[in-house]
Length: 192
Picture 1 (cartoon, rainbow, N blue to C red):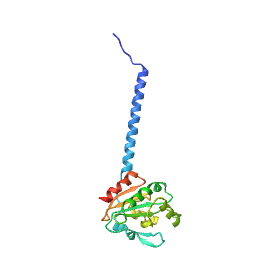
Picture 2 (cartoon, helix red, strand yellow):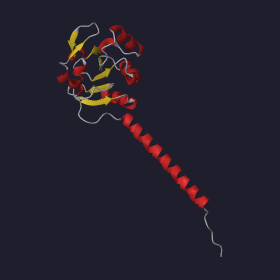
Picture 3 (cartoon, rainbow, N blue to C red):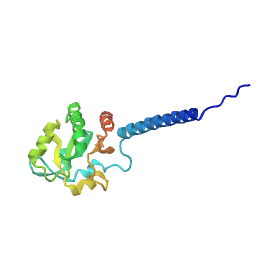
Picture 4 (cartoon, rainbow, N blue to C red):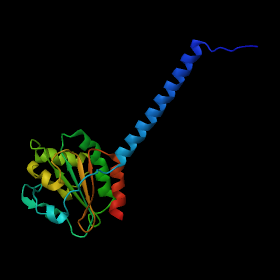
């Protein structure tokens, strides 16, 4: 009768193998969670309806005061993006937002670029930023920082932030931070 004994070396190999499997599973789960997070719209309360925020004061590119509602055509879906020229994630997001303008005309989508938290930037700096990233100047305005909470229904002033409204002006989604897959999903909201 032969008795087979496993050596301590075999036990260590099995332990390392299982540790390797655990690391691979952890990496796969972390990657899936990151993918879902980047694809997701924000949870929690949405921003107020367009009828409420349309009375917020803004400054137009020529320096004249106006109301946010002056930049929004009624009966058209609306995307409002909050950005600053110094903001790295805003620079990453800008081409995606500009792509929305190229895909949808101003007759089919209100696209409002609200510059916030950027007091040191001159009009020339802002115009250069918008030209560099292909952002159309037709919906550009500056919103005072103290008005961000009234616009977003949030106590924080994180940017970039993108607010999406349907054609009736009802808030349908918001995105805080640069989330490229969520930005891609805006196209579906706009066309539905």
